[in-house]
Amino acid sequence: MLIKIKGSWELKENQITSLKDYISRRGFIKNAGIMGAASAASLMSSNLALAEESLSTVSNLYDGHDIMDEKTDIKAVRGYNNYYEFGMNKDNPARYAQSLVTDPWRVKVNGACENPGDYNVEDLIDFNALEDRVYRMRCVEAWSMVIPWIGVSLSEVISKLKPTSNAKYVYFETLADPKQMPGLSRGIIKWPYREGLRMDEAMHPLTIMAVGLYGEKLANQNGAPMRLVVPWKYGFKGVKSIVKISFLEKEPNTSWMRLAPQEYGFYANVNPNAPHPRWSQATERRIGDFRRRDTLMFNGYGEQVASLYSGMDLKRNY
Ligand code: MTE
Image 1 (cartoon, rainbow, N blue to C red):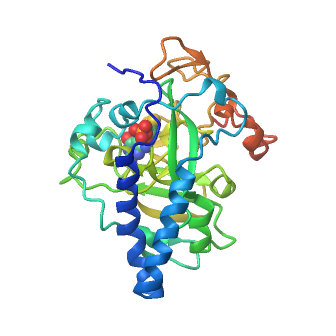
Image 2 (cartoon, rainbow, N blue to C red):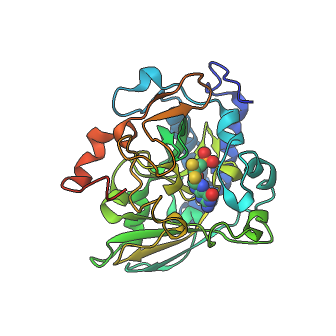
């Protein structure tokens, strides 16, 4: 049962403390290495001030729909999940992902880029420049949430890796460790979970690599330590717990395309006019609401992203 508690998004002291701990563990070590202990300590406190300031930002919904877009209760964001590596039911990830080890975490980068290699999360994410992004998330299953993410633009991560002109797509893989992920014993998907974006989609300012939500580091069930968020696409594009980033010349075959190509395409842009073969996409159930609401083209971010697809038939390129 999902209960909506008005005002549950307001920051509580323990949430701020928890983010401080996280930044100090992830960020301080890196800064200390570069600057020496004394100056790193003062940088730390200004980082914390920055993070807290950004957390107090009320809303970054980009197109004026925020009046009807209340943030989803944190209990639902953390308790109603899709993360099939931990089971198929919505409560399985919260129950079984707790023991996932997310620190240290290595990410392999390869393909058409100047800086391939094995990276730590803190090499890829600038923890001094975390941003607050409140986005709608529309699952292809026709439910939705509004989630206050914390992260950085994916473009900032990609810039560090210096893709070459051959890189037309970027491809991501989730960890696939049967010892930690009980769902892997069921071959629903050909593991690891894989997703991809065209390079211009990946570089779009709305696309983020998230490391936290609601003022805290990501819970494991939400994709710790870092996961993709592409707010105008169906939620399944938001690949969790990323361990590999590849720059490719050709459009990659993603997990859901492999499983059911007639149902799930590469683009997966939210489109109320392109029904899923087994259900309509015209409306959605906002978790916590009683009544269904209309689904918006590009999930309401058309003004920002429609130009990426000009001239494309979006029913064929679903
Ligand atoms: N990433 C992995 N690795 N495994 C998954 O099963 N599910 C996707 C996406 N990312 C999934 C995943 C789907 S279908 C959705 S709707 C979102 O994660 C849900 O994200 P949330 O549980 O954080 O709300």
